[in-house]
Length: 392
Ligand code: TRH
Image 1 (cartoon, rainbow, N blue to C red):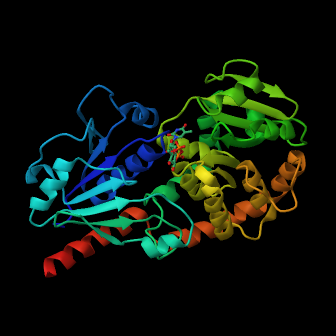
Image 2 (cartoon, rainbow, N blue to C red):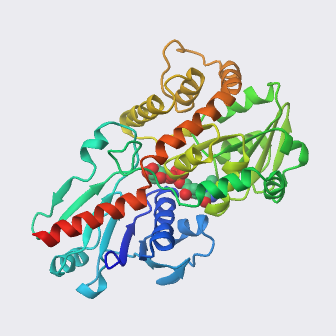
């Protein structure tokens, strides 16, 4: 293959780990499965290190898992055409250095320039996916590429070996038990309903915990360190450090270390229910084949509630307990549930539906698989743009 050989991916870490989480997953897949030399430009090496402990935070350039990582310090710099790549991707509309753009205009052929957007289930995405945007001064066109849930979008990130790895892990109870045991999970906890909790601090965690405490089923809630610290500490009565644990009634809460990205997948696979958030963990939960509750990143004017409803409408229009629980977990309104929220009733209805929801997730996966994977779809699009350009 002559095109593409090289790819530059620019990532600005706005908040949390999602942006770098997605870019790092994407970069590794490009390198491993498509043999593309990837350079990931990232401005925040500390956040990167949390999901990938191999990252050094004090170097300008490093090689990890076959990819080059460059510390993106500022918008300065003079670039020559030799510094550029066949494909240039801005993640989530981050502005790349002006000098880099000038050099792109001088290339022949010019790099394929894409803006990789965030994931939403809203319908408008289909109309915007692959749209061009001309540079106001230079002879350059950038195209928008949207991940999504339908064949008219770019699909979801998924490594080709993911399903096989998941099935292997989930069919090996010993491997699952060993994985959880390294975090101190006891055999009694192993036999309980295991729940992973990754959410933003404003989630109604205390209400959920109270429902679990008084519930009939033993629940073990596994929380990575640094997640919703105040609520977790309030339950524990001590610092929410990795290894901390406390049991009240039917609920045990155990704090885990914040694990490297591949281990986070294993955590999702090993649990019976996953609370996830943002974008990347949300997608991983969909591939885990287990029931999940999504905490969406909050936006002004409750725009995120619209996005949440759009997803629920696609994912589970027929499972009322999942829809209601998800909406209330995100502070959105539920018709007929105004005033005091009855969390114990919600939780018990949701728990009763978990087998049905797990079944649903398998159907959903099949549907999503039919859309191909985001990385292959994006490369196919880049190749089509390049051949189009060659004709003109
Ligand atoms: O960190 P997030 O809240 O990221 C969000 C979203 O990307 C959102 O769209 C963006 O606009 C906002 O940040 C600013 O949640 P997300 O997307 O799930 O990313 C978390 C990453 O961290 C994901 O790659 C999984 C990884 N992770 C680990 O590697 N280990 C862990 O222990 C945990 C809990 C997560």
